[in-house]
Length: 310
Image (cartoon, rainbow, N blue to C red; front, top):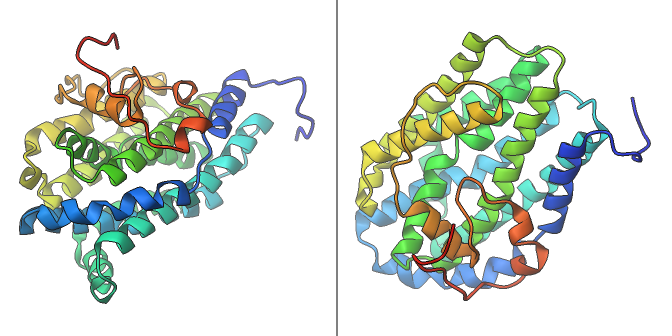
């Protein structure tokens, strides 16, 4: 095992590590913004509020699930990847704290037990949790790492997109800003896990890769259906297609051919994600060099327009 850092041997993992390092932030930096979302939440109808509570109940445990998976993964060969995984664990904890702060901001303390009841009562949330954690016990390192790739790239995709949709409606601005920061982090985690998988000496055959990716898609699509995303004004079918699109995106990062062959269904998504960050960027190709650590410390006021070149 290598213990000395220089010369750098895995340039890709090192670059991703430095990008994540440049984007470190804390929950306190967005906590004040989250408190302002209560007014928007109170203006939502009962079904929209139910969607918010349902999604929030999942995110109260989601990053802790990922932390548990990270704890069980095999040790990466490359020191640069081990450094990335260390900083990833730290930022997952920030995400966990951020969602907890948002829950405190919009759900009265005497109703907080409802969120935990939603977790226990939801077949889709339980299935998604069990699916992700199943990779903790697999004896094959390639299966474990691929499980991480799918968790980061597919199993949170629908909610990230829905939160960006709220941005287009000028709703929950604190959450949508925090969501942009979290998506930026998770896109890095997805890219690193896929890179790590491609560095493994023994990877999985195509059919096994597809079986795992399809399992992630099925779990996320069940979550979409149970959440009833239509109450926000989104098409359920479009969201199901979006999950498949993200699966193809992950397959491409893994060096595999796409499987679903679908188009990205949300014409507003690139603009909404860019507006949240105040940068000229693309939801799928955004790299944190565009909005490094300094921009995480304050909410951007700059909005892009349709005339901007993405």
